[in-house]
Length: 159
Image 1: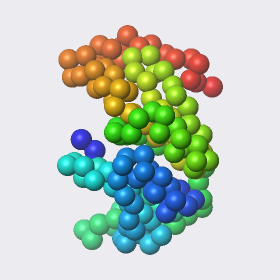
Image 2 (image 1 turned 90 degrees about the vertical axis):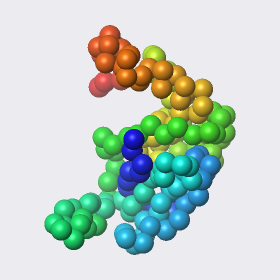
Image 3 (image 1 turned 180 degrees about the vertical axis):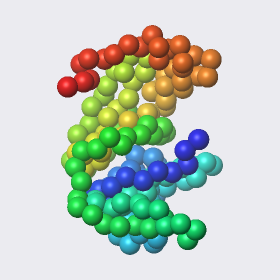
Image 4 (image 1 turned 30 degrees about the horizontal axis):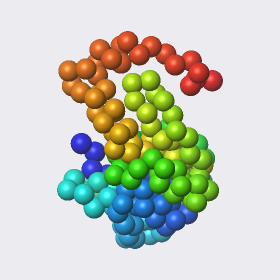
C-alpha cells in the first residue's frame, strides 16, 4: 500500500486544496519543504499527496535523510497515480472544472478512470466508488497478471 506520494505544482497550496477536496479531506502546510502542502485524505491508511513547488527535486542526504532542492519549473512528466475517493463522478468533474484543470472520463478497458490533470500538467486517475470497484476487480492477485498479458498494446494511447 502506498500511504503518500509527492508531485510538483506551480501553486502547491491551491493544488493541494483541490486534491484534498476530491478526497474529502484537508490540506495543510508541509513544513519540511517550505512552500509545500500536504493533501490528506484523513482515512485509516494515512493516505495523502505532498505537493511541492514546481522544480523541487528530492536528493539523497545520507544518514540525515533526503533534502529538497529547487531546480527549474517542470511541465509534463511520467509520474501519475490512481486515487480512490468517496466523491461521485459528477462531483469530481465539477471540482476539476472549477479548478480549471483538464478532466476526462476514460474507459481503460477493464476499468474506468477520471483523468484529472493537476494544473493541466500532472495526471491523477481519480476512481470514484464504482470505478474503484472495477479497478480492484481487475487488479485482484489471482487475476491481474493474466489480465495484463491479455490486454495488449493500446496504440491509441501512444504517439
